[in-house]
Structure formats: C-alpha cells, structure tokens
Length: 223
Image (cartoon, rainbow, N blue to C red; front, side, top):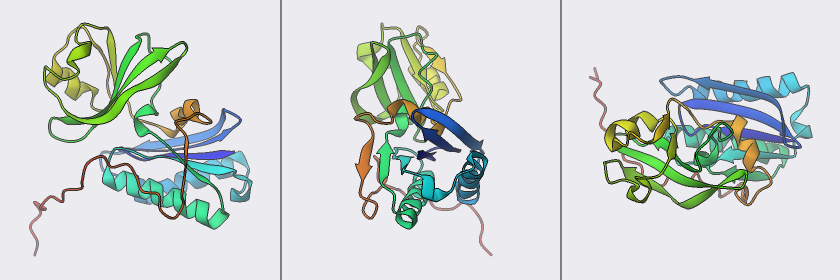
C-alpha cells in the first residue's frame, strides 16, 4: 500500500493506493496555501477511513515538482517524516504528470503550472499506444506566440492551472485548453511502478524546484 502526496500547487492532495486501486483520496484547494494546516489532517483522514495503521504502509510517494516552493517543502517534509518514523522507502514522481489524461482525445499534450508573471512550468507529452510519455525536458517557459512553435499547427491539449494564461498569451485558437485543473495525488496512480517512479534517499532528497528561489519584499506596513 502506497501513500501518495501531491502539494506542488494550491491543491493539497492525498491518496492511498493498493495494487493500482485508489482506496481513499482527499484534496483541498485554497487561494492561500493551507498545506501546513491541512496536509497531515488529510493524511489522517485517509488512513482512518481505510481502517489501516501507518505500519501497514509499504511506501510513500510524493510529487517532486516543479511548483510552489512552499507547497513542495511541506509535502516533501511530510513524506520524509513519515518514511523516517515508519522506516518506509520514499519515492517521487514528476508533478507535471499528475493530471487526468484519461479524457484527453488529442495525441499531443502540454501540462502547465503557473510560475508567476508570464512564465509557466511546462512538460510536453506524446501519446504512445494507450499511454502518454514525456517528450523532452521540463521547462520554465515565458509564454508568447512563439512558444512551442513546432506544435503550432498540431492538435494540442493544454492542461493545468496555467492553461488560461497560455491561452491568453500564446493565442493559438486551434488548441484546446483544460483550465483550472491541478495536479493531484489521485492521478499519480498511472505512474506507480513505472520508470517515472524513482526511489529517493530519505535523508538527502530535495524537491525539484527548477528555478532558484527569489524572495520578494513584503508590501505590508510594519508597525
């Protein structure tokens, strides 16, 4: 049994998976990150409703990013803490693959997560038989009309919380956009027990931030 965590965006999500079947899942979205307050409660709810103990878990799998620094730190810290306390192996999966591909009709997909301003974190995918395989590397893309130019004349599905941003800035009216969709632990199942699932060192594993953290000056007035 695997405990899956995906916290790289404003969607905080948990799923319990056994032999490819989702036993229980929980997710909570908020405009402000609630991961610090809610993640452990969501984990406890899933475990309690499944009627199991942490000793019955076989592993923990966490979305490794890219995404929010805050969300990733909280998710990875929780995963490492559970693994350390219960002596479980830790695995990671790419966050940009944790979307619902089941309803996609197109053979080309771009998954996108907001990276602020005109930038997105993006991964291209190609359909291979009944599955989608990553094509190229994860990128931080400043979106304009020339982005992904090699696919401009193709039928493409853009999925993610930054799909609307891509629609506005890229302007390709022949593409389809699945807006307001977030990566989720529920959709990590398709990658479990594949080459995308990587075993990590519990002590030294760090999230895949892709970009360096830049602290912004607070606009709040201090007393």
